[in-house]
Every structure is written in C-alpha cells, then in structure tokens.
Image (cartoon, rainbow, N blue to C red):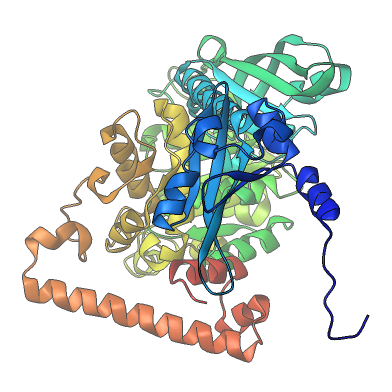
Length: 581
C-alpha cells in the first residue's frame, strides 16, 4: 500500500462493527427505506434486523421521525421516545454527501428505562431520608449516631439542648467527645455488637447526668455504626446544698474552673492568663484586679486548680456580704463562750477550714479596718487567733484576693492599711475589661450559647457576624457578666426554631456605654458617620499591618503573629473576619 492510500472497511467489517455496539442504529436512504438496522436496534424493538432492511421506516418503526428529518434536513437530538414497554433516548441526524446533498438519515438510540427507574428510586430515597431527618429532629429524646469507626455522623436538636454541644463539636469527632465522666456506650456497642441499656454518664461541658440506651446498626450482616438515645437525669438527681445565707452569706465550694475555661485570644487577656499560670505553682499571694464582671473569680478557681493545693478546699468569701459584727468570727472562728449565742465547744473559722488549700477574698478593698491587722498577721505570721482565745493557731492557707476598687486611693484616704496593701500586692494580675478584648467576643459568645442551650433547652448553633459587629460597638460597662445577660435575653427572644443569633434578636443597650450599633437611634447622623468612619479606619489599619506581617513572614502565620504581637488564634480570627487572602 502506498502512503497516499487510505485503508477502507469491507462491508462485512462494517456490519460486524455496527452489530457490536450497545446503541441501536437505524439508517435510511433519501427515500426513507431502511438500509442499516443493527442487532442492538433489533433487541430494543423486538424484531429481526434482516426483516427490517429494505422496508419503509415510517411503516415498520412506531413513532419514527426519520422521514421528518429527511424532509427538514434538521437534526433532532436527545429526543425521548417510547417503544411499547421500553423508553429510549434518540438522536436523529441527516446524512449528506461531500457536496452537501442529502442522501439519507440515521438514528442512534439507547434504552433509558433502567435509568428512569433508578432516578425514581433516588427520588424516593431522598424523600424517605428527609422524612427520617424530620422525625429525628422532632423527637424530644436526644439522639446520637456514630459510624463503624466511632466517629459522630448525626445528632438532633434535642441532643444540643441537653449537652450544649453543636454539630461542629461532634460530627466527625470520636464518640467519647461529649463524655465528661464514664465510658462511651457507642464504643462498647461497636466493640461487642450488642445493645447497651441504662448506662449512666455525665455529658457535655455542664457535666449533665444522663441515662443512655444504645444499639448497633446492622446493614445486612455488617456492623455499620451505633445509635444512642440519651435521657436527662439531672433534674431528678440534682442535690442542692445551700448554706444559711443569714448566718454566713458566702459559699464554700471546690474550685470548678480551669485555665481551659478562660477565653484568651486577645493580647491583654493572654498576658493575664500567662501570669496566672506562672504564679499557680507557687504559694505567693495573688491580687486580682479588674472591673466588675471581668472574671476575677474565674481566675481564682483556675489558679487553685493549677496549684499543688488543688486537692484541698477552695473557699470563697465575699467581704461585702458578711456583717461586720460576724466577720471576725466567720473568718477566724471563736472559742467556747466567746460571746452570747456562741456554739458550745467553739467553732473553726474559714481560715482553719481552708487549711492546706486556698481562700479567695473577693472585694478585699471593703475589708473593715478592724480586721485588716488580723489579716496582716495571717499573711506575715501564718497563724490566727480565734475570737475569745489567746492561743495562736498555725494555718497553711494560700490567699487570693480580688478587687475592682482603687486600692492606691484607699491607702491615701486611710481606708486600707499601707502594710496590708504591700502584703496583698505581691503578684498583681490585671484582668482587662471586655471593651479592651473585643477579639475574644466571638469566642465568648459561642461558649455562652452552649451554656444557654442547656439552660433554656434551645438549639442555637451560632451568632452572625453582623450581630458580633453590633456587640463590638458597645462599651460593656458590665463586662462579661453583662454580655451573659445580653445573650441570655437574646436567646429568650428567639423563636424556638431559630438557630442563629441575629442583630434583631439582641436587646437594646440604652446606656452611656453605647458607641454606635445599639445607640444609633439616639445619635445624630453626623455622629453615626464619624463612628462608622472610625471603625472602617481601624479595620483598614489592621488589614494593612496583617498583610505586611504576612509578607515579611513569607506567609508563615505563626511568625506573622509574633511580629504583630498577638496570639496565633487571634491572627487566624482576624484573617477570617477581614477575608484577607
């Protein structure tokens, strides 16, 4: 064969090829007479191909339109056609010679009956899935499902209301992620393949006491996961032990918070936490300073729990809540017959009760002058003398004090002994107000949402960025305590089915602390414009510095955070908030 010659197919080879294809194929000449009718077309139509060749197509093929294609010269693509109990999809095209003259038409088609049936099954499956999800989400019982690997795949709103955990906390996470105390029943079911009934656990950040029934999920003979129904036992198991507020007006408790409970992405708060962590391992006296509602008691709990004294008592004393006449007896105890009404045999005071542990003196700036000398003795000599007694009793107590007052001013005015001030001010830790740590606001909100989901039986999952922006425009004179109040009211105002806190859910904060968002109806348009421009200028400056730091660091966010002097998580938050690419 010379290079210029092209190979050609014989009629026999062409016939074999046409009969081997899965698609049906029918060709007619310019007169509409069938010239090609392959084996697949015969199977689909239930006829013998040899009987069809030579016949007029419109006479032997139901619903054919090949004669129409011959008349119009126009192709008909992806046309649906029914052949008795078979549905086909058909492409009909005119056939032209090299000069462009019409010499026939061809139809290529395939059976789509099974595809239609499969599509209907998928539609039914989606309907059933939607129905099942609606049923699961409507039940008042908390439901949790994990796959064969013990990873969460489904929870319902009742689960969030009970545990305080949302889908982001559970889905794709290990089965034990929600357990505060006890063994995962899901893992036990997956390990044994048997159901578990009546297991008692504590779940979620609030350590809610629950009873769990769990069962394996089998698909055929294969174990594919575990499903658990969780019932709340907290209300019927809660044991409340209140002290006599008329006698003591204070609480004796074990510290329940740790440093993990403190939200500290802002630089100021992170510095306070770092100082508190360092001092925890020492017996040094700590003075927590900050405005009301900033979390001084939370720090006191965390310091105690991180100290070598964590197994001992943590006693909280509010120095403003006990009458001055009873204060000395409450703190230092009394001997038998010390005063009228004294308990026979005397009684130990709070400093003796806290021996080996920690005593937290809240509002230390309000301590009466008459008791300041005795507190100074404890700090200096590590001993107390009971009311009506003469014997010094040694006490090993770590003192954590807190105040929101100006102690330096109190010293100048003579309301606080100078020597006591220096004894207390060994390790001062300043806790920044919320208005100076707005970077922490989104994370504080998410933590509070989880807590209030449990308290109010809600299924709120998040707070919108617009709502965060609105909260950021407030001065927060009440700090985190005020934020708790605001979010609590917001969630109460929400419809039961709402899952996201929006600006319209937030209560109006009509106080001098308002900067823009909540006080816009009290401001003139010029003032609102200035406020908006200032906020935009701050944003632009932050974006510019972050981009510059990322460029210097070659895109390394850890190094960029060090350059900017902020935490890495804080940098990630700002990058996400400002959509920095």
